[in-house]
Length: 102
Image: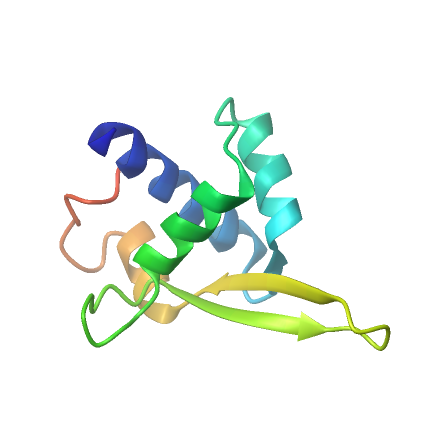
């Protein structure tokens, strides 16, 4: 499981990097991960995104998360890569052993 998580995190960051500076809906992330032969469910995606975001406990800070509320009351989770995430992808900061970049 740890290696699989590392690969999933790397793929998430690559997808968000390609979309930068736009926000990406979780559904789109799930579809793109499936296209990359990395099918996961929404619960697993949420877990990996929470891991990648910046919190006082983690200090990863590679993604920002938000929930877009539509006029109809629907909540759409979204994420985007941060400057620190871009620096990781572009190898401007030391590699993170918890994220496998391919």
